[in-house]
Length: 178
Image 1 (cartoon, helix red, strand yellow):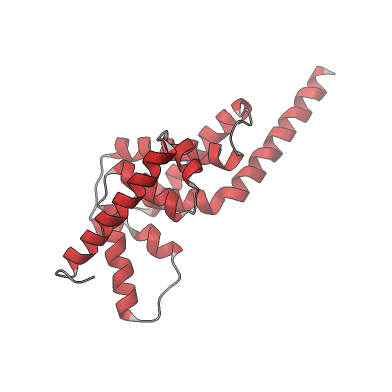
Image 2 (tube, rainbow, N blue to C red):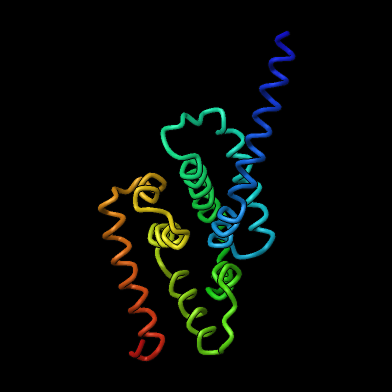
C-alpha cells in the first residue's frame, strides 16, 4: 500500500514538474540566453535549472507565486553558471538572446538600434542585468524584489537608473544623439 501511495505521489510530482516546466519554458530559455554565450551552454544551463527545480519542487511552500519561485531558482542557477564558466566571448555573442526573442524589424535602422541596446544591456553589471531581464520579462516590482532579494523600492530605483545608463550608453554609441 505504501508503494502504491509513493508511486502515485511520484507520478503526481512528475506531472506537476512537467506542467511547471512547460508553462515556463520560454521564460527560462530567455533567461538562459541572457546568461550564456552558446547554444550548448544554453542547453546545459536549461538542464541544470530543470534539475534544480526538480530537487526543489518538494520544498515549494506556496508563499510566493510558483512562477516567481521558479524564476528565483532559475536566476540563481544562471548567476552561478555565469560566474562558474569564466568563459567570456565578445559582447555580440553574449547578447543574442534579445534578438532571438524580439520580433524581427523590417528596417536596418531599427535592427541596428536593437543590436545597440543588446550590447548596452550585456555590458551592465550582473545585478543590473538580472533586474533588467526580469523587467523585460514584464515581472512586477514585487516579483523582481522576491526573485532578487532587493526591496521593491530599490527595484524601482534600480530600474530608473538602469534606464538612464542604457540611454547614456545608446547616446554614447550614437556619438551623442539618441
